[in-house]
Image (cartoon, rainbow, N blue to C red; front, side):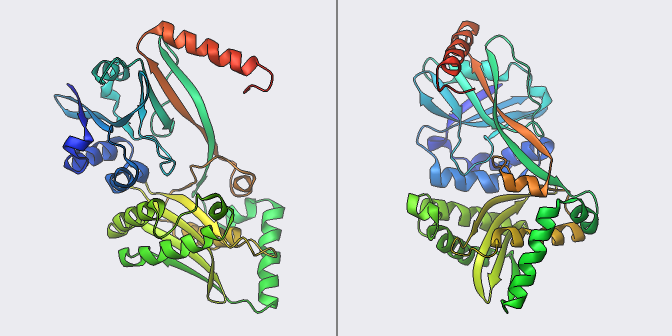
Length: 346
């Protein structure tokens, strides 16, 4: 049985336990826990948000948060703060779930897009009649499968030499380094204030996209981190130079024993060293030595700096399910024409 409910009428928290049970049974990622999703809805959810639930005799086999994206087009709820689209399904849900969901959506739904899916969590489907799969981004991760000394010895000479040189220079200049790990719910508001102060002083502040203690982004990260802190699974790593915060990483830990680095900021006025790189050097070493986690996840687009820390990547993807196969064929032809045009995407 498949049901679709407007969240404005029903509310997410009423179904949070069912949602988490499904995540725990298959995915176990922090990014799809209700601790992450609920504040995402509170801060960025639109009035047309719908909760899809699919059940069989054994229980819930699929769940998703969907929103209207234009005439005939629905997609998973995907604010920029969410690395993954909120869609959960078990093997029992079957390949026909998306077509059935299309028929349940209000109006004449012609296209359902499942955005930003992770092949580690949900195997990438093959293309079919009316089903198109599109690459999204390459993302990187680090497997914690050896000791720190072995991992560090495998890194490139430029990274190892760069860290050593910077630490020596800071020592010679008498700069006292301190790394803190903030874990308590009561510490998260201060962490977001410090994070926001650094980010707003940089290029994101100039562009109006920075986290701030008093804006919706700041509210989301504070609420979400407080949720995980109450479970003992929030980590805000902070590097200070002489008592002054110069870099912070916002992280959460899932039941899959992976830590997700959600956000990084640093003091952009510092030119002689890289606070963001040094912060990662210190806490990555701690994570490897503790041996309690299995993976460090980044979930952002692979950048040059990721390649210094790891060679392990995978491709996140989108799924477009069309109501009728010919609509998918028309869409594919349009994409082909755009790619072939001068200056088009390739």
